[in-house]
Image (cartoon, rainbow, N blue to C red):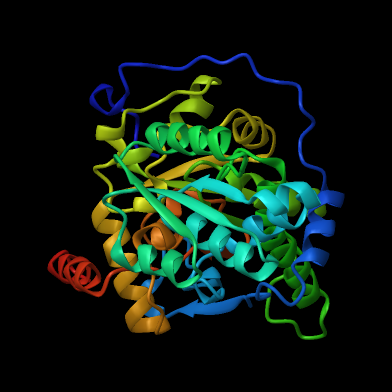
Length: 364
């Protein structure tokens, strides 16, 4: 892994006294999966690769879980629908508000429309247009604020207080974590079925799952589900090196907060959160086996490989796990296959083209 350099560390580090709320249990994730039947897609495990992609360990193929194929183009509908479906009748009648850099807002907007609930989404002004359009298409109300996640959350909480709305945190919320964990439930179930099938194509034994970390909701849920069902598995988080607060937090065993100016440097807009949440930190500290960090150009090259070899469009956040497999094989367990969770594919066409050009300039 890349060592954390002093210039990447936030001047302000947040020490918190962790609450003793129980960690999300596997039963909660199973219950979330039942609520999501017919709402989200059980995305498949797809074989990906080619001989020219062989890593130093001789693995020429990985398995991809394409959450970019979800109805909103990202995994966030899992947690959003699960959380909104658990609201009381009174809360539903009043509505919800959330803070989001894009995909969570789309998830809440879609879930609210399906459930007949008013939704307000607080978003940064630099949100990619494609994600703003996604929220608008589901008739949610949008409030634009500055770029920092703290400002978004503060504004959303103020709206919740003023309008009597239920605030739905984008990641530090057990119902969100449970919903996102259904992706891990599917991975563990599908791998076990493939391994048990006669002449199965998925090798028997341990395996590794690579999952992006922004605020930590997805990684918390996936790690909980996979490690609970398959203790032999390794689950590694993946972050951009320009927004690697989770890695630093886990290394130092405390929540470390980066500044908005620091995390804004990464192209992965879905991973610009400035710190983990209290609940997600506890889950990652308990379940996660480590964190791999990737460079910006590695993300772009992974996007290009996904497009040229897999015929898939990924946003930068969605390509981080693939970048870890392609360019950091030495940091992964030597034994067993690798599953890359692709978290989303909502990207503006013009920016996408520029990033692919950067990937080609770097060698493809």
